[in-house]
Image (tube, rainbow, N blue to C red; front, side):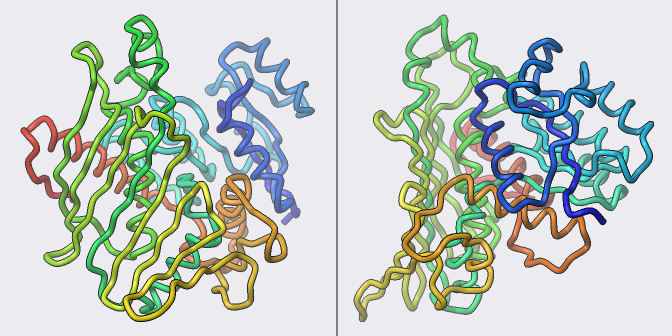
Length: 378
């Protein structure tokens, strides 16, 4: 198999933050070559953008259906192997479903779909296809998040008691307080974003990070939303109590109106022998705390770290690594899976994580609408 995996991109054109994040991440470990794309629904803008980033235009397609039709005409050894779906949420399901049905590997932005039912249909399609499917919960790629996961798996905290995860942003403040603006943003439109804005966009990252690091599943939730305005149909703030078992409980706090906050994802996990604390805005520091010993600080690139953490570290100790490296680690794991190589099951979130995320999102909405009652996850 050639070194470079043939990658297709759907969406992510222009000044899209998520677009540049995925493109750079795919290049970091020299595993992928962008071979074809539909960056933008406007074909002229699509072609102009391809030229701007120096992607050959012979496989820049007018739309997604044409992308599938033309790629399937090519011999398998020339055809695009994996596609990254970077479009607004409502397009994730139809695109991913058709990609799976035609035998492509898929890397999909979160939330994986806009409904739990769609997520389960996609899971069935994936099982039939037998291809690789990754959901880009980016923060699982950070070396210190992976270090935390491996240490918890090895019993560093003992029995877990409590989990506290938060994701605070303030970006929607400039939109939500203007009635005209909030009616034109796709993230506040249920037809395009799904039934949740805040929890669907960022709260689900906190949910995923809890299950990824602890190895435990959240079994039931109780949620309270804030919409701020009567005409706003989408949550912009939410607090969710979680139960992982009878004696393991916690909270997920998420907000898009936390004034002054930038990208404040953080997690604290408390166990009988100690606790961990990690913050996305200071990703190179993992704090291990205890009642009986001084606080320990773990940092990337040192030999004391786990194999999974070191595998995701590209620079010597003391050199900061960030969001591009984190996403690149997910792409690296997907490349190994596509090539049939051995890989750690913590290298990239799978379709199972995507389904769990939609189950969580819909359950938070149901909990709030039922008067803040406890809802069991499947």
